[in-house]
Image (tube, rainbow, N blue to C red; front, top):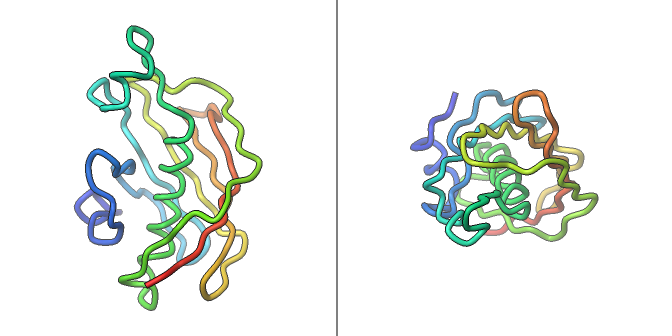
Length: 141
């Protein structure tokens, strides 16, 4: 549905901090599904952890937030805005994510107002839930 070049037209993030490779589903204003292929070439694996690489949980949450940002910012009236974190609740990390895994982010809008809102994100490897969180955000010019 959206490839990385399309995502880069919506989000301001760039390598090495663009953490979404593809959008495979999108239900306008309600739900979005994104993909991240985790490779040994990720720069964070240099120090997390040498000899036993594990994707930092905070970056999994960031990737879920970026996926949610595509949902919000690809709507016509929101183009050109930026989304900021306001808070993270109920974050849980259930299984390590390692090189070779493909992460699937399922993000659902719970409440969206003109400038703020709340989304629920879940990250899966295959059918296994590896992380989840509620993310509060603010949109600005």
